[in-house]
Length: 444
Image (cartoon, rainbow, N blue to C red; front, side, top):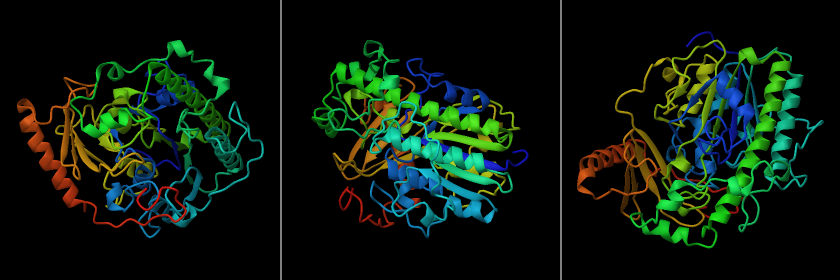
């Protein structure tokens, strides 16, 4: 792996699609994210363990799948007795820092992060809403804490920082879920906003019936006008996020930290953005939700590939952060590390990656799924319904081929693989604990 790096920073957005950056899709404007891509490696095949905030974040903390740690849904509490990444960095002599969105019950401090608050003097909005209830404002606060922490850094002790922004997650009323950041929205004329191919070509006729019901729900009953408006606001929020990222990178440069600090950028899950005539997120298996961005910058390492399409789980994030610091990745980290991919010239054979979802605010349809380079298979085990796509022939996941003769061999093999994985990792045997302060009710 090379010489260990002293400092490690994990930067996370909330609800950012894998292609939501201008170096991939020119309808976005993220110049600072593009610069980070130039410095490092972009992973394009990372699959989130769960397309929901809390379960996915539980994976980042533990390196395990959500069902293994009893965080199936929003409102479930991550047990502070669970093995966690801060504890491992603490043992290695690091100062552990957490700023921003938490969403796992209790607090980051309860999971042994040493610093979870900091001063906010010099805070700049940069176009963010001055109302502190808005996500753009919360991210301005989080960024100012991180900048002040880095400014005060004297280099006497290595640090591990988790910086978790809220954007581009929606938080405005249901009829307009995405916050309008007016300062940047004008860069994205509505008439230029793209309409997803699957919005135009998927009538959901081959899909589970609850997907059609969801598409006709008041919140998700879309028009092209609404899809374009969501796209505009989503892009404007990401441009503001990118401005915050640029300030963070400038601070690292000014403090002379950039050459001994690993940076991993990712997101917990994506957003439908009108794909398949669906909005936001939920118990849906599509790439728009599960395929998440990962950018890894490791000073002093020359990777074999600058863009890595290997299929890997977001559970590898935890081990990657530890490995970057030269800390042995413990057995608790189910997902391993991304570092082996940096040395491989091509993807490994027989790739399989697993994922899950329990419940959304609009429906209870728990699923377990598995993806290979050619296929995606999903089993809704309460509904006893299957969903499957040939990703080579149907990359937009338009036609559900579960039950078709030509897919039967692959279906049988993947059903066996995902069932065996589910059983081996405990299924839903780990009981969840509900956060008493959660607004989501007993089960979220």
